[in-house]
Length: 342
Image (tube, rainbow, N blue to C red; front, side):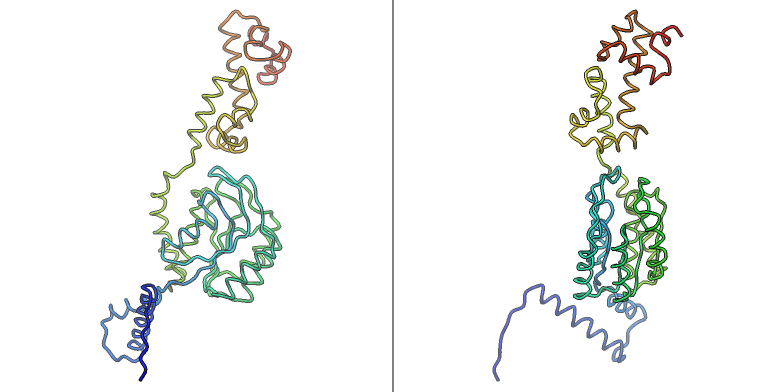
């Protein structure tokens, strides 16, 4: 008899050992050829259920990794799941808000879904950002065709910063067409920490893939999120530091420049990001902060010095007394002379 020798890699050996283990346990449990204690039997059943199952997440991209497809991958992987992804929209955003959406063509979304479904047909599908009617049509058609066991919809009509993520007509279409196909619809408070609702939904998906009921999966997900809030509450952008740097630069340059772009360039950030930071921390746009600082300096000079209005105007960087008077009256409702008299 001809004997053949061959070698298996460590990964292949592990796979064979795992398959043999589950095959043997299945036979023993089904045929009752060996007596197990209740706890041992439950442990074997639990291990068999917890074999890594693919989970498909259909949502948008968040470059900060706080939410979106990136957060799904991190959470599912951390919990032992295997994330497969379909991207519906690419965003340009920071921890202070979304700057721009770039929705993926529906035909590309369809190709992504078909590629995953043809190859793996995951039992669990998590859906997040769906912003266009064409993409909704593709998602609904795929769910109807492939009929996954569980569909989780993490509703995102409004971001954690209060930004509108979809139109009212789109929200109505989702409620009418997508929600009836879902096992679970999650709508967490918009004031939640950035991405926390996203991570909760991902955790639910993983626990469902392990064989938990919907109720069990949600209970375990809440426990998991409780630990995540503690671990991630200190992870923030550099907004506070940037805000104080903006005020420092303003105090140094306000007489030479009152342009928002000038200060954004000094701080090496975009004007839009600077505006997001000042609105979030100070409650005002950069231009409003600049103008208020300038008028405070004008008031100080008018009240505490004997300088004429014209001298004050030039010291504050205005091209003329008339220009300064117009600015001051717009801010205070009265001219510099009237303010000084009052």
